[in-house]
Length: 225
Ligand code: AP5
Ligand code: MG
Image (cartoon, rainbow, N blue to C red; front, side):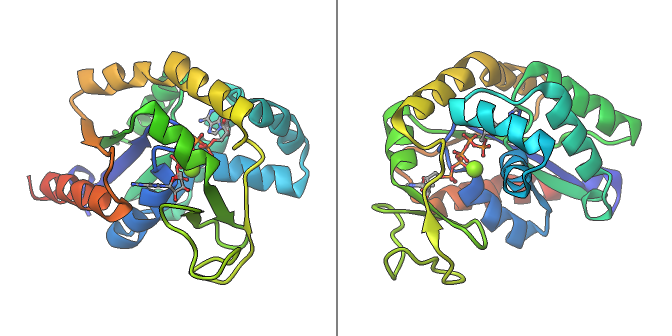
């Protein structure tokens, strides 16, 4: 694959916008490695590493982990072989400094971000989605008690793993996460619009499959352009 055919994709959107839900479908359809900084940080928390313990305090409060830590994790991950011809970033970048670091890392390898897919969802819907979210402890698949309920109560549809609620999906932390998104992450919408790579997907009231159909259209069009 030539560099111009690469899909170097960022999924941008507020907490609960559906990044993880869409990333799972995009990974399978476009064979892109799904790189979620939230998942990587939660894995570090579960391993009980020093970095994980420090991150947990911030995550539980709905605050961001420091740019240095997250940029380092992503740089290492992007250096792995499966990301050499394309990637799907979920939850990164989240600040202008992170976006600039990513641009520098990619430019050093003669690469660039090709598509930033913004999942646009009104705030009331976000709160509803996060309150009802249940994740699989084994494979991470997101379910929702109302919008995508599991076939068997408390069990993952894909692997029958146990479903759980994230520690940061409580009311106080969600309100802080949304506030942090507005202040620190939303400026990235203009940052990527200025670079001509922003693709907005109005997701309100759409099912996950309908949102995915819109994303497919965008990425297929980019590849054939
Ligand atoms: P992270 O794990 O990235 O969380 P987030 O951005 O808050 O996003 P979520 O994972 O909550 O939502 P999502 O968009 O993936 O939605 P989902 O698909 O699950 O980050 C967690 C924390 O880690 C941060 O707060 C921070 O502390 C730290 N961190 C991570 N990255 C960092 C970084 N770069 N820098 C610094 N700190 C960082 O969907 C939500 C629910 O809605 C599910 O139940 C789903 O089933 C349902 N749903 C999905 N789509 C639809 C639909 N179309 N209709 C109805 N329901 C739907
Ligand atoms: Mg997620």
